[in-house]
Image 1 (cartoon, helix red, strand yellow):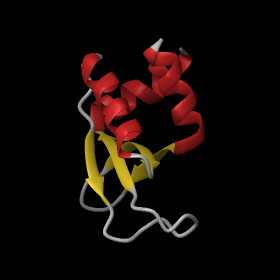
Image 2: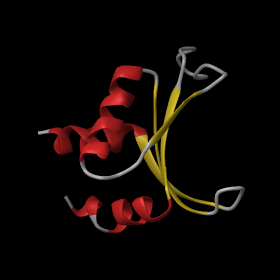
Image 3: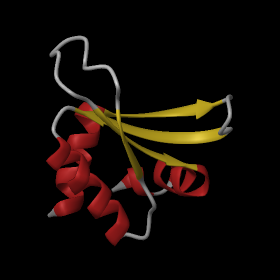
Length: 88
């Protein structure tokens, strides 16, 4: 099941935060060095009606020295994930 896979991946690579900068409000972040896994996360979110952006970091991961990708969700989608979907 894709949602179970996503839950496990988020447990290891994800976080929730509150932004106070340019984009204010809640944020859900998933960070990884495997672009295929990050794209799979984005696809699962998209298939469940949630818009998730992906950006490639200009600097590699400090621990592994590999390229790093960030997937992020802001605003109402993030609130819904934090307050409703996390109960899955």
